[in-house]
Image (cartoon, rainbow, N blue to C red):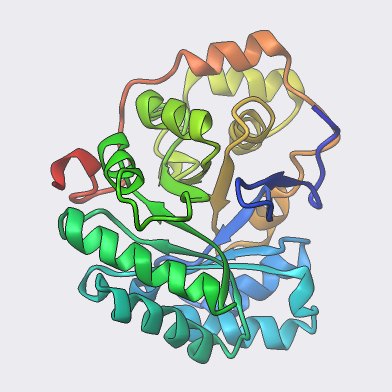
Length: 281
């Protein structure tokens, strides 16, 4: 694999490029300042959502940064009540208005609730948004193989999801859905990429951190982008930690160490709440 850096991207199945590190804005206390800090430390990919209620501050941070829009990658997501064709299209427009942007780089259906028909209708609305030039790539979040196959089986679906955002970290590797996404060219992005800090004392990760002279979080993020080719979404209110997440380049994990991290999977979900995709019909 070519040498990775903060300017590296993964190519999506629609031809667009996604930066390999994303900064998240869920449950932030001071979103504008946190996003500005991330942008100052070379992040270019910002992840938000209707339900996070952080879109206004994301827009403010982008304008305050002075960074040209063409150099940034902005993702947002549609929440359940808007899972109709017209509401999905309007949802994209609402995000653009709220953030004062002329386009989004990626827009996702936030979860698979609502049943097959509502998911399909919302997807058709996102296709309309692509056709209108409002969003460049569209995808899903928390979807299982079943949900993706149902969507693919509809003749009106002309665009394959470019991305599936799921919980993913060494202790929750979701092998079935990741394998499916890789086979279909669907880029996986990872929320709770550091297991919300719940396993930073893991013996293997601590050993590797010591071996490479890095922090446990840097080892995990490096494994994710180097070995699994998954885009991690990180967040922190502390500038030093934001800076630390950008320092996963210029060094590599040995293949054997990556394979050992692969073996940590135990299906542990860090996120609290009903986020099991298989629970949704």
